[in-house]
Length: 417
RNA sequence: CGGGCUGUCGUAUAAUGGCAGUAUACGUGCUUUGGGAGCACGCGGCUUGGGUUCGAUUCCCAGCAGCCCGACCA
Image: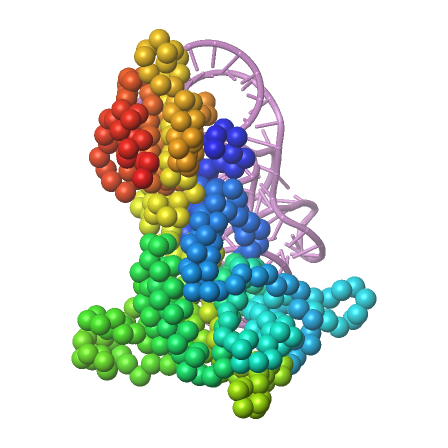
């Protein structure tokens, strides 16, 4: 992509009032735009990051047999009424201009919808198990949106739902999802702690959360410094300085961001929508369900919280909007052929040919501005072409201080893996 | 929802009960070019409503909005 064509621009200053690093950097660098508190637009750079995360999540969900689908954001009142969740505080209710009372809500979760639609197709034990997921917008009227993308009123979520004949089969799949989730977070550069937690409005069972330890996190967890066993403070009887119930290791209290969770739902939703199957003996049984969420936009914010320095974001390669930031400093394109060197434009085109994603800063701007922007935007590799580099290219990794001078062939070798 | 802080050009800020200034961004021109270049000219602003006052961007009250703390939080 040509940076001169990118319609967004970086700001010279941080947004006032914002304290969370993800809000400060993502807004300043032009990844997101705040329309209202907790309501954001994803701009071209930010949307590419979301797409990288979505691709990772999709691969891991597909790998465990999850079937991708897409459900409505507009929910008829009958769905939430069936489970008593119509009057939950966070529900946005929609007036349609004719009916004086709201008859629809905006999607805050999809258990009701998928359970009802599953009841159309599931009749026999032969139809089980299966799982389906979607990546969609959730709306929750949070009493206090905060910390940039960490707690929004509108946000993006991957939600997976699984359907089983009994608890044993649910438990089996639960562990499979657990491993898939660890893969997702690891690939995104996030080390997550598997944490025992409560189920809130979703289930009365204990649940598990994937917590990224981080000072701006809203949750408090107790985690064993030896075996990483963890419990959320909201249900825990542990305390900081205590001993781990599993291995006697020392328990530490940590602030953490909940980046994902997995819930055993039992038959709560199946009962509400009469989702039952006939077993081998001809008897009808309720379908046992699980639901599994990953906050995609929150995950993006978490990556920024984990990977930034005073100059800007330091994207892990797996989720960076582009792999390479190619800077052409003034004078470099004066007469490349004459000087016997490859023009920045040619380098840009050749890298694209071999599939390297490049943001090419072809703007008429000072060296200082381009270098500062490169640090702020934070792509993994910075290539500089200038009169000083001659027929070579200067290469710097965003997460390292050293710069190297390389030939184009050496750059290809470095990037082409 | 309770508490606190804050609302001034696009952005970030200053001052002020009576002409609202600076930086940057933006436009034009010229000169520049390795860590947010220089000069000149230009464009552009006081959150809304009420009150006090001869006069309010400024003081007071309320609303709205944003951030932070708390409550809440799959």
